[in-house]
Figure 1 (cartoon, rainbow, N blue to C red):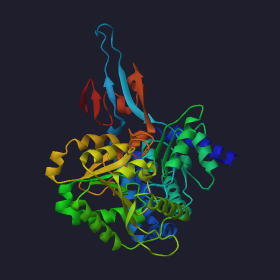
Figure 2 (cartoon, rainbow, N blue to C red; figure 1 turned 45 degrees about the vertical axis):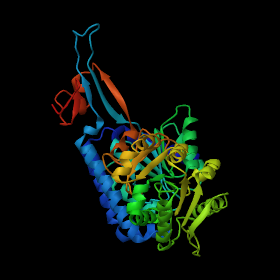
Figure 3 (spheres, rainbow, N blue to C red; figure 1 turned 120 degrees about the vertical axis):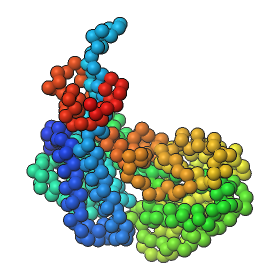
Figure 4 (cartoon, rainbow, N blue to C red; figure 1 turned 45 degrees about the horizontal axis):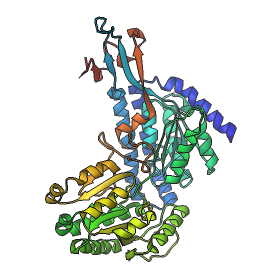
Length: 486
């Protein structure tokens, strides 16, 4: 296997030499063609993904659309070209105290990127998911380590990517697909000298292991691990008094969507003791009881969910408000529990992610205690505040806490469902991710796979088109402090 990985990485490095200089329009053509080839797999892909994941075919209709849309969106981004953030400071020989040289900066591709497929999104976060799409858009060859939970789905999508490369006459080693269940494969890919960066979506233990492998290298490389969170929800009284039924229905759906196997699942809720919180808790339990229970993605995920749920329920002070009792292989029973803030603070295990259809309501005596509990929580992908305008104006100080612990702060909406847009942030302070400065979803995801390069006093004819005087690409640039397309 060591020889195989070495050959794969040598091929990726060789492909990088030509691929990194491919024009934005050519990369757009590649990304659009990949989307076309994925769509051409039609129902066969949907049925295969459903069989391997236990998720319904209807789920994959939407997920395939998202996958193809983000491929095309990255294609549009690189074809337009301004994403390279070109900056030009022209020379000034009269500058004091020393002459100022001509300096020009832009973002350039890092090199071969290793992507680890995610279990919970076999299409949108795996083989041709956001990591792969953004890395290819940046001009980086991609080596995908297929997730063992859906090998056939991954293989089908990999075939579609290779078909696109063949159609366009591009180097087939721009994309390579590696299968296998050994942790050693992941370690070898991460630590190979030609690997320039890593994208990972999964568990905290898995993401941290990949990060540590990368730091043990002679030359460390960036690892962008997205490792989930509990996504705390703040329940303010006004929202519960005026919109309890509406919020209960929405959050019951958010807790159970995808059998709770979303990294943005609202796993912890914080509210102040009183009738409003009691009523909301009862309504949420009632809504959960009306939602059927389904199979989880894999045996290991099901075992982990069942084990963590059992441990939480057995903790002193934890009260079970609702727990389904469906039977059947891999079926996950949704659950809602409550605990007093004092007991929550005593047991750190209660603030860990439970990957499944579960949520815990922490009952606080007052706002001060709610704030203290909220501050105890580690870095998050999201945090949500439910409140009326009056609530929010009276508790504006809560926003400061929210911005410190999460990458996305949500008001009066559910956290599940991540839009692939220009303003999207799907990241957050550790342990939600290994680098909170970046997002794994949205157009800025491309910035993980690049680095800035400055050309000083370089002849115009040697400069990349993005930095030449005449601006042949017509992109937006910052020239001597002013943004323009001149």
